[in-house]
Image (cartoon, rainbow, N blue to C red):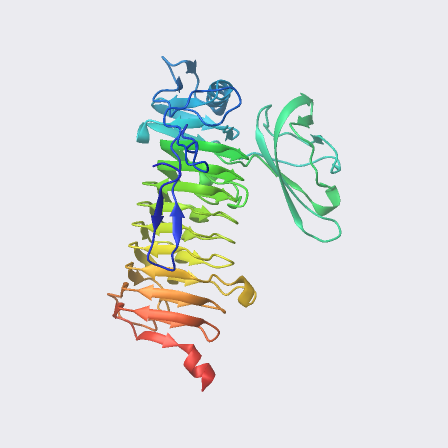
Length: 449
């Protein structure tokens, strides 16, 4: 799909932008009206042809351009193709074990071999600090490194002595004298012994910040949650990206992370399609704070704490044709400044508490307004007091249109749709609700009476 193709919905003129294929560029002459149909690659000019082939390097256990089964081999391939303007890193069949993230670069495509390319996070190592570390320090001293090696990714967590706020610092160990290790970057936050800081080898499997035009596809990622501590989706996941544009994740299986599956924070024009994110302790898919125009299509999210979580300020997104099953709390969660999104034609089965939740945020100014929920099937809730669609807080301007909300168990205290007392401008049209103790509970009526 070209970046400047758009899907326009019937809801309030909402416009959803798609995601570029690797190597595509804006159409020249759009503003002048003189289109450039066959541009030449010119020094310094971002407008260039859509190249049919780019440099490809293979990584694998044998018979590959780079032979290896760890993150270092894949990182070397990423850096190599990026040096020449981008290309594909083809990960051959095999099992790969990571002691650190692979940090992606602009115009790089990661192409696996489906279920035959499996990346597993190694068990986490915990180590105790032996000395205070100041915000300007670029080293740590451990009582015992406990098996930490150069090249390992680590996560330092330490509270601010005054405010108690938690600092989460991700770094790589790059040099060593005994128990004393240099970091790739300065801490930029304090880690004083009196606040009992922790150090663990926790990281995402694939990560990127401030890059564009990245594709990850056809690969299996295993977070090995049984042997790793929790690190939430604000900092990690099987894939974790921040401040990126034009990111595609396609046919990625992400499983068993002690945190989130696929997480993108402040990332724009993201396409996630045909992925399977399951059995995480956190969120299956996490379009994170400030992400604009995400398209989330034909994915499966199962066995997570929550399936699809719209974080803060996620706008102009489209979630359609996803299968969301057996998530312990919520199938889909929408809240803080998550506005102007369309959620349609999804199948949401056996959620714990709520099929689709509009969260109760801190006052009307922060509510997830102007969203359209259309033609979804919400089938079954595991908790006796479960709710198909729950509109909490001062949420307003929500269209609930032609959804099927059905419960096959004994009704219990389950409710089809609940509208909270502060909600406003909620439109219910053509919904089919059956099998609940109450089809619609509108608490606004109780509040007014």
